[in-house]
Every structure is written in structure tokens, then in C-alpha cells.
Amino acid sequence: MALSYIFTTLLLATIQYSLCVPVDQHATPETRYLYKNLMTMARNPNAIMFGHCSDTWSGAYGGHAPYEIKTNTTNIGWRYTVDQALKDYPDELSDVKSVTGQYAAVIDLGLWQLSRDRKIVVSHLAKKAHKRGVISTLSQHLFNPVTGGSPWVENDNGTVLHTVRRLLPGGDFNWKYQKNLDTIAEIAHNLTDDKGKLIPVLFRPLHELNGNWFYWGLGNKVQNTEDDLKSFYRYIVTYLRDRKNVHNFLYVFSPDKFKDKADYLKVYPGDDYVDVIATDFYYTTPQVKASDFHTAVKHVVEIAESKNKIAAVSEAGLFNNDIDTKTNFWNDKILDVIKPDPTSRRIAYILSWANHCNNNNCELWVPYKGHPAEADFRNNFFNDPITMFADDIPDMFK
Image (cartoon, rainbow, N blue to C red; front, side, top):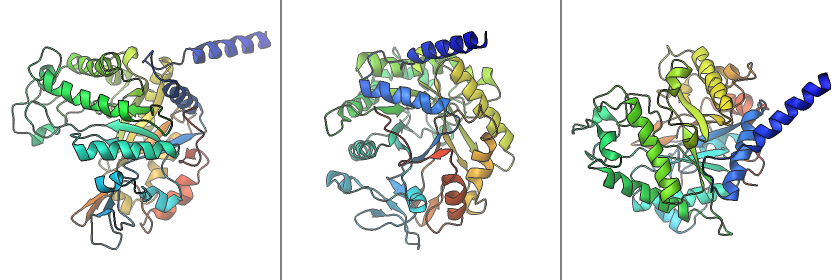
């Protein structure tokens, strides 16, 4: 009877895995491989990839020509430029690499307004990342197409009421948002490797859509409804996948903090539009509890596995540069919080936000060489057997 039970369990697991396909039925073979490999990574409680937004695009340490120098301090902040991309200059710098000797396993590249220069740099760095086996994700802080103002609602003095409805098909500004999607599709179609094959990426539209700070959020003066946001997410996926024939995207759903599973799912667009179930979780104040992070990750994993999706933490970090003093943050408040629980360990990756500098001030989420948190990050977080950086991961595209 025990053997029969084991056989049945294995059979059911095999059937479930065989149904492990992305929401794009026409996804490229490499995109399907990435999906299955991410699923395998997510189901493995002993492997979590570490990601860093703009890992090779901006940083706080080691800047030199021809990088754009962003500070005059001893650590020398830097930014990779369009001129470097056009000349195929190596994207050698990385704050993560300066501490660990390895690049992050996942890099997030911000699309923002998709200017000519940004399109060039995003495409170039995504291709560079792919060549070293790193996974790219794309996110966007698009200015409000209706007002031209900030994506942060409180910084926009224009008429933002019902922005999302006005961007949907039938709305008076749909044409403008559609042009943005056309540009994203253009980038996707031109993301090719040395053999001319399309490079798979994770696309994360409308991140933190349950929060009240973006015009694509809830509970602010835009007065979006939950159905507005579900429709908006579906429209983005449907337009890119079915109309523009973008077949190298996996779609990430990433609300901010939530109270419970029902709260998480209140803006969920449906299983046909999401490949990765994720959350953004920041320690914004000292009052944020590590137990809340554990609960959030556990809920994300349980929701993802119930839907046969991939689980991830799409953004995480400590606000106000507090990593300067809380030097073991990435263990104390992230890794050691989820490690004791075999459920919360089953995530594909955790991604931190970008280190970036301006006017001699740097916003930091991970340490750089010489930073007070360098030793703790390297000795405790990087050296933990469960974390995986660029050199640790298998070929995710085969």
C-alpha cells in the first residue's frame, strides 16, 4: 500500500509538472525552458537566487572613465552610459560583484519613459546579462500618460481621476499608452542573442498595484477600482502577447504588502495572465516585523503552488540606508526569517532595489566593497548554501 501511495504521488507530481507551461501558448522554446527552470528553482527549498536591480547599470563603488561618475566621494558612484553601450564597452562594474566576486543571478532593468538612450542601454545590458547566464526582469515607472506627471500620485498636480480607465481600450488616452506598449514590444522583438534567438525576460507590469502611491494603485485620488486594475493588467498581457506577438516574456504579478491571501488576490487578473506570483516587501520603518515578511512569503508560496505558478520576492530591502548600521540585515530580516520554514524557502528569487548615486548622495540597498555591511553580506548571506548568484546557477535557458 505504501508503494502504491508513493507511485500515485509521483505520478501526480509528474502530471502536474508536465502541465507546467507559461501563459503564452506560443512562447519560444527558450522562454519555456526558463519557465520550467524557474519552477524547478522555486520548488527547491535549498536554492534561492539573489537579484539586484540595475546591477551593472548603476552603483556606489569603483566608478571610473568611461562610466559616468555620480559622486566625488571616496567610494565613487557610477552609471553605465549610452555611449558605453554603443561602443560595446564591458559592463564590468557591480556593487554586488565588488563584495562577492559574482554578479547577481537576476537583474531588473527599469524601462521608465523609454527614451532612445534608455532603450539602447536596457537592450544592451539585458544581452550582456544573458550572455553570462543572468536572468533579466523589466519593470516600468511610466509618467502618467494623461497628465504627463509623476507616476507617484502625490507628486502629480494634474487631473488624475480615473487615469487607468482612460488608458484602457475605449479610453481617451488609450492611444498614448498603446504607443508605450508598442515600444516595449519593439524592445522584446530585438532582444536576441548571438545566434539570433530571442532572449527570454520576466516582465513585471503594474508593480505594487495594491498600494496607494502610483496612478495604477488603489485608495488614492485616482479612484481606481479593483476591476480597473485587473482589466489593466489583462490588457497589457493580451496586447503584448496576442496582438504584438511578444513570445519571450514571462509575466510577474507583484503587489506590495498585503493582509492575507484574499487581500493579495483582490487585484489578481487571473491564471491566464500570470506566470510568477510575487510580492514587494520593504522594511520601511522600524515597526515592520520580520514575522510579517515570513507570513507574506509563505502566503505567496502557497498561492503560487495552488495555481501551479512560480513564487518569488520581486523586491525587498531596508529603507533610509539603514543597511549602514544594520549590517546583517540580509540575514537577520530576510534569509534567516524564511529559512526555518520549508514552505517560505520555496521561492525562485529575491531581488533588491538599485544602488544609485546623485549629487554626492547614494541610495543603498546592498553593500559595496568597503561598506560597513560588506563582511556580513559576504560571510553570512552570500556564503549561505541556499543563496545563488550568477556563477552558481545552472543554464536557465536550456
